[in-house]
Image (spheres, rainbow, N blue to C red):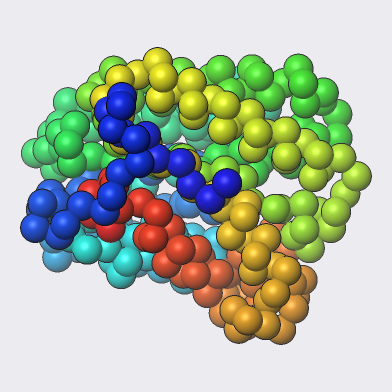
Length: 289
């Protein structure tokens, strides 16, 4: 599985929209954990055409040593203007009541923050159903904290039910374009180093996510929904690192470019740039790419 696109029922796979047909602005609302965070504040400088990241400066507030996928899809790998409203918070799980990681801002809270700050389409983000994209990359911490002491067959369905609920809250607010990323092979990160059970938990999570996305599409008409397979892309890089400019699959370098890994659990910005470039190939249907 590389990606999944669903358009309005019956439309099937969507071709890339021609540039002249794309919206002038795309309002890009993102949710997740440290793989996505940029340190954005809803009360800070808001995105504009001259400053599409808003706050803070591009390449800061991340865990990559530079920009991450959100920054690249906002400022480099886009075909029309993207404005980034990134509500992701490092350390987040999907729901602290299910998997408590020690971070207050779980994804449930992030969605609530969106509803408070942006659901009414304020002047700083006058989005509409046709020009807003809602992106989610969550699960890395849920798996990391839960795999050693929880039964995947019991906990993962609860996580997915809450995941679908959060996406449907955004649908109820008028969201119609959705981007989901599955969990990359963090089992192979230097921190986890193929710990027993982690990869099995991760595989179960990603399988359940695909099922949840299918159900979300079926239950909510008129969406354009993409499920991007970050697991497959990172696996390809880790299996053949020299092809992508890295010496091996396990080295760590805080400069963000010399190794796949910026630290023992987070890839550097060189990897994130590669993934963003790959994502661009698969998200044309969402409008700005």
